[in-house]
Image 1 (cartoon, each protein chain N blue to C red):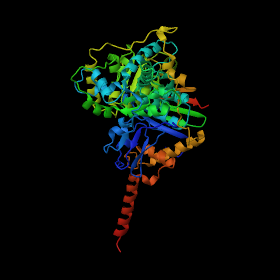
Image 2: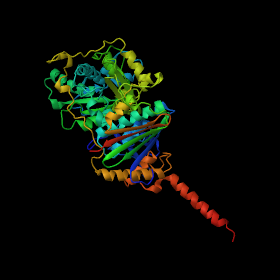
Image 3: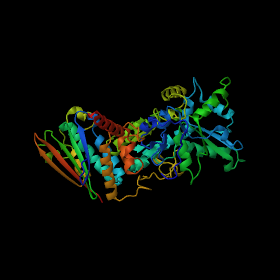
Image 4: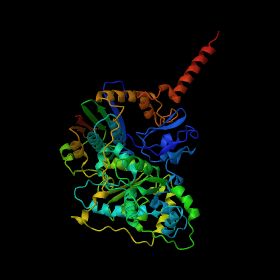
Length: 143
Length: 437
């Protein structure tokens, strides 16, 4: 970590290893516990981040996850260089999924990834360019 | 957790300060200090992994010896069902029960009976509509302690029914008082024969302020060795086991959950697997599962560190022992206002399953302070070699960085960094020595 003002955790999400998906969110959970955040907030961040990790592995061949920790706010930035989301509004609908069958066979691809990320965070923004990639920023208020 | 009495003991003379237990402790509770392993009681969950991996046999479980039992009392043996999986070619559980009477116990109440009662009431409990699913078994004390310290959002998933050992202790005492009206409650001692040290901790730590179910805890291994010489399998034994198939399936992983006759269950064993499953449940990734059985020991309770037989062999032995037994011999009457969901109040666990926050005690920092501390940890971690060799006495470079920030370790305890510095020093000297005069 660079000598900057904000506590930052950086994770590379490996797109080639499906079984490792979700590891970053487990690490974040542990760090948040050490930092004394409430169990409920920790759970929300962990679930939202988990969904983001899974999405990046399924659709974008991996990416990066950065968590910025400030006193009153937590930000999770998920970035990938995948195919991008053509229609964000449709993608946000519960149950909508473009996951391939082999992924669905594992129980994923229920179309709840993005909706869950929105439900569990306080603010969510999606910046996606088809053919270039997607960046999702999740904000969590610390009460 | 304040006041929790652990049951793993270190024999200082035997401990060489190697990294075996250090690296295997699932909660990073161990450090090597001054050449010996030191366990941090706040993080220890009594899983027994360190006992299992210690090459020097320096880590021991703490339990009572048979000779320490007060023989002037009416001693009731509460054998764990795993005890019955230790013997070769055992065809009848009655031999073991008769053996327990022959080595000096006044009475025997099988914990497997407690397990069968537990199973029945769990089925009732699962018919309730107001429960949080998936229900997580509370029979393994390691798992309960793990959830209380590490998985705060899962505490309300824990099944609030007394453990089989406790049910057995409670009923055994009551039965004895009925059978022997001359006895007073204080004349009775219930003695659990345990496969693991976690049960010892559980008994010592959680019973102080309430009704005592179990008075003493001895080990399966000690009792086993006493029994093999005492058990004469010639005549048919007088004593009669009151255990069915279900009770004798409990000690192996999957036994408790399959007994519920409910298809939506998961059974995991081995502490690392248990932690992974709990992480999944906490993230809401476990659907269509209503019951989760977790055992810290590999194979289930038969894998406890106070047993003798290999857990997978013990499992097979239990299978053949229970083959021709009735499914259960401890049916409970359906009573109460709603018989389908009835659980007697006296078997409901009154102990609160509450989260024990790691911040309790010494480190009561403000958010700003803890963020600053974490940044320092990150900076120090970046400076470490990140090879997790354990030579400094911490299990990982990250744990080392945490120790340094907390003032419990010094940066120059990192041998790899020291070596680099030493090399640089030698190189400098070489260079200055090589310069021509």
